[in-house]
Length: 633
Image (cartoon, rainbow, N blue to C red; front, side):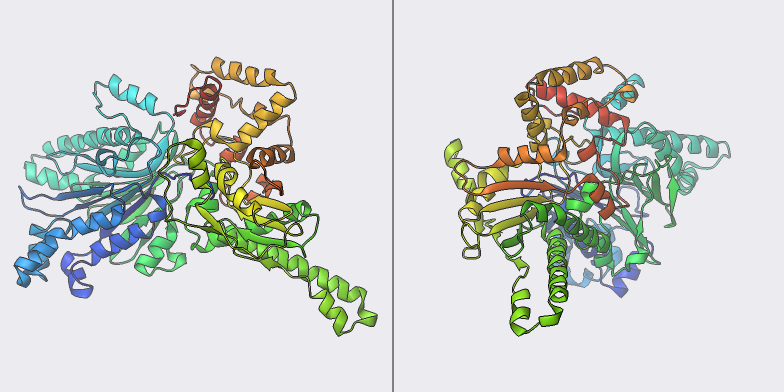
């Protein structure tokens, strides 16, 4: 994506089903830690602002630490964490080499040698990336069954409602971020579950130690989670572990945030990305399961695991399409094919934009996430050229000769690597005009591949959010190559509405499609529509989220997709640009044909899967209209 946007986080959880001695004998005593490092590193695309890691040790003696946590907001947080994770082990090996293979000793004396491991990767869409904002969050207790750690990939739209509810119950939350509120919400029902079991077994006149064991064995995490998420409005995939060794991974009922899990006779593992599990544990694609929306993977203290329903699934689901277009790793089999399909499906619009002049067109992509969509686009070009060749051969079948064949085959798909990002370049200048000049050099180009004033240049991007990088950098340097026309193709549809479920797109004024629609309204003397939308949004400001309607849709209703695309082209065209700039987008219909299982399209259509989404988009418009740059949630 040429415009940098951030995603809220990735999760990883690993439960060892056998004693640590088993893994030490079969794989080596740091096998589990190494697997977790890989599982997190294979998802580093999901969060580079910070990371966190935690383990729980089973059956520790009283007084022994059984929960270990490490967090880092360093430049390479995952590497920094595991450097610290291995510090105790390396110290022991150095001072007592004979203990290097003594797994029982290591469990008692080295941190992070536990049976239950949880990791988190953060992209901070809200709050500073300070250590205290990094997951996992810990709700400490002297009772192992009440000790709770949470790490998640989510955003909730109704955090204020839940905060008010906790306060009404007499609690005094110090932290009000959604993760902290979720932690307290689950913690409240976990406390209730433990207390009910304690009272039940107390009637049987068991000792407190016996009761603790019974509670640990009988804890109903399905009930705890069902009560906890009852009023959650948003997208989430979060994992949690308790001090007594239970664990869970929960997913929202719409399936907005992704989650996968895998189990064999040695482990249970869950993560945000399927390829990460496959690579780390050499698992087959058919054995890695997608966590069912509205369900939780419950891992009991005895190691048994199963999906349990905690909220009714919404049908049809609204799994996030942006995950498929951009965020998730393209090494996933299905995602790879979907991105290729997106590239293929935009071809007819590109062909129209270049007036069918394939012979004088060079195609490329804006690195690096659009490379798979480019493969699909290149295939569509090649298929078109092949079809044209066949038609010409058939037309000339009676007098075909070598010269004619050479003429026919002279037209080819001209694929070139044009745009190169110089990731080492940093901008330190503070004055706007000088900074823009420096930003223009963040990207470099391959010279000599464009016939000046004759060739069209097509570059495909996976999505265009703000258009800032295109205007300030990419288009200017492409124009220096001398193409007569530059076509910027987005494999995603026009991004018109903010996200509120975990992707950092919360301010309407940052969307080039929104700015294009506003500009068109003003040009056509329709300022009254903008004012009416504001008035309608203000009317609903105090309504419950269940009664709110998305009025921002009215901003776009007067215009076709093509009108908005043409206006976007004007907005992103740099000053003194010689080439004609054309912008084309995939349609929402083509998006759904390419990604049929992921129908969540609220960024493009404004059709939010939860009530809170409508409240957020109206708030975002109010903020824009009033010149307030704060977030809408």
